[in-house]
Length: 388
Image (cartoon, rainbow, N blue to C red):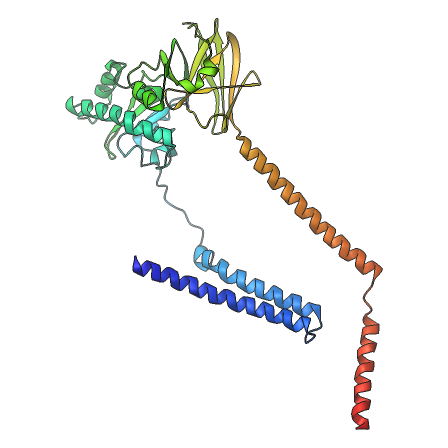
């Protein structure tokens, strides 16, 4: 640690002396101009510009220099598709999630190169999702891996049928959290021998629930979400009671909700039901009213957090289009501030240029008169010397 501190101190001192030299040179130029030693403005401008250029050039070279430019060459693709990837990608519907147990699912992001991964694409997760991983998902995964090993289901190197049969027979309570997150595919085995397995019990992108269950706190929510059947019941925090009011879903067994478009910042669904429903979306809820906005048939409506991490909302009877869009109000405000600042800068620049042009037109530089004045001064000096 002492060596690191010493290195940082040395770098800071070197930059401080460097800055002092440039400041001193710039101040020297201004001093010479103010006290008349240098009368030509062009010399000052060129000198100042040269100092700025040298300063910026030297600093920029620290980060972008000749070593950063290499000849064009073919690079090996470290993310080539494995056997499991190729099998899974045959699915015509790309809107599913994959849990890859041949790697550390929550720290290794390679799965996200080809699939929507339950493990995510980065080691740092949203706080709520990380808590769900720690308190619920890890338990589901441990239970699943223990059963696969204890039943010797990974011994067959030629087929995934043993694992497939187990997944199909697994009780709904065993993988509720993973099913809630739409784990349609599972990759098991080892890195050298990946076994892709389809999970027919995954709940899908969205579904209607029969019941709503209120809890008093986030702790109760994360505890209860592992005990309920998320396909039929949605848990919500009491702080959303104003949104729920006296609403009770009238579950329609023939109702449907379908994902029609998926983008990172926009998701669309179509719903159809004969009565009022409550929909749960297998997407992470983010920030009350400050991130994702939701529109029902083009009109902005509210949604809420359910099952600790997911989105939920009331859906009226009939056929409707639901659109989620990531459009945080703070982003729009800062965009306006940025635009206003840019426009103001342009106005000031054009105003300054216009003022200078107008000034030059009204008061053209008297170059010839200045030259004659200097010449007459020099002549008078010479006469005085000759008289002496």
